[in-house]
Each structure stands twice: as structure tokens, then as C-alpha cells.
Length: 142
Image (cartoon, rainbow, N blue to C red; front, side):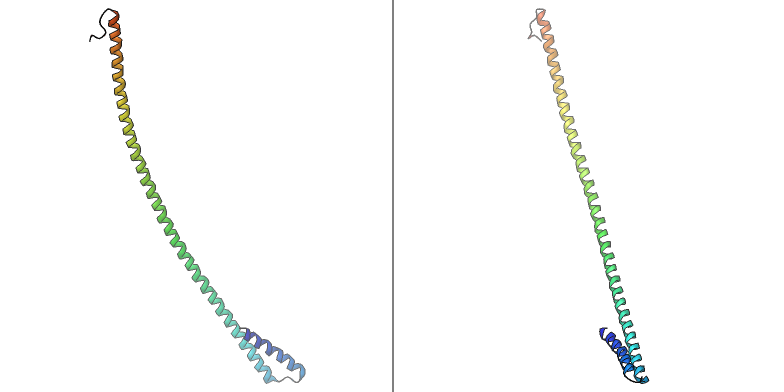
């Protein structure tokens, strides 16, 4: 591309220098114009090709980026689904543990209630025994 611009520049300069030094030769001027025109067309084609190349590169990278974003979105969705599944699993495990603890607690309260009832019966028996003992009876008698 630089060589085309150099040829164009030299052709124009040669025309100007030649015109100042002597009579203007129309054949040389025509060749210089043709060379300048061809150089300009070549430069335009080169620029157009470069622009097309950059556009294709940009579109390719844009497509690649979109594919990466789609893949990342898919991975994120799968990850969220796994997290949701694990949360459900943990909640179910916690529920089972709490149910077991509640059952154990209920069993312990039932045992405690049973012991408390036996203790109350013993206290009632002792109170009855002391009451009968004051009246003159034997405490150990049933």
C-alpha cells in the first residue's frame, strides 16, 4: 500500500517538476494521470479489503463471544439447578433430623412424666403413712 502512495506522489511531483522545467508533454501527463488513477483505485481496493477483513474478524469474535456467553449461561443454569437440588436435599435432611429429635424429646418427656407420676404416688403414700402414724398406727403397715 505504501508503494502505491509513493508512486502516486512521485507521479504528481514529476508532473509538476516537468511542467516547470519545460514544455508540457501531454503523453507523459496522460501516463502520470493513468498511474495516479490506478494507484488511487488500488489504494481504495486495499482499504476496502482491509475494512472487510476487520469486519469479518469483528463478527467472528462477536459470534465467539456470544457462544461463550451462551455456554456460561448454560453452566450457570446447571449450577443454580444443582444448588437448588442440594438445598432441597439439605432441607429434607434437616426435617428428618428435627423429626427424630422431636420423637426422642417426646419419649424423654413421657419417661419424665412417668417418673413424676411414680414420685407423686410415693409422696401420696408417704403422706398417708404419716397421717396414719399420728393416729397411732404403724407407718410400715400397708
